[in-house]
Amino acid sequence: MTYHQKITNEIVYSLCIKTTQLLKETQDKLQKITWTNGEANLDTEYSQLACNCCSNAWDITKQIYPEYSKISIVCNPPDINITFIYLDGSRVNKKIELKSSKSLKMPGSTIKKLDVNQPLIYCVRPQDINGEYRIRCSQYHNAMG
Image 1: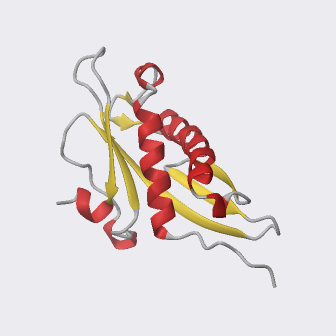
Image 2: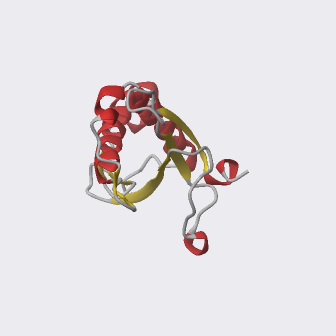
């Protein structure tokens, strides 16, 4: 039997924090994203950027927590859907929810399927085109309060 370092909610939240830090450093890329088209929110580019930051954050996280060093990840939109891949090929799926708005009020969600402990990255887009994108992370239940 192969021993696996368990992917805990704590390690996913730690990954969320590091991903948020890296996203904050991508102000130039955030400014180039097409966020809306009329009434439709187009978070695809944001989600892809966040997935790239998450992959980079995992490399950093593994240096801090070497017990996870042999686990790789694949991140895919929408949001950040993470597949943790063990050396033996087994997989664990986790998710970091992404939200964005020009308002400090968080947009609605699918409450019925919601895990209130799920990590969340919230991007407050600037009113001014040259303004700063403010990015924070939390667990969903803290963000709703």
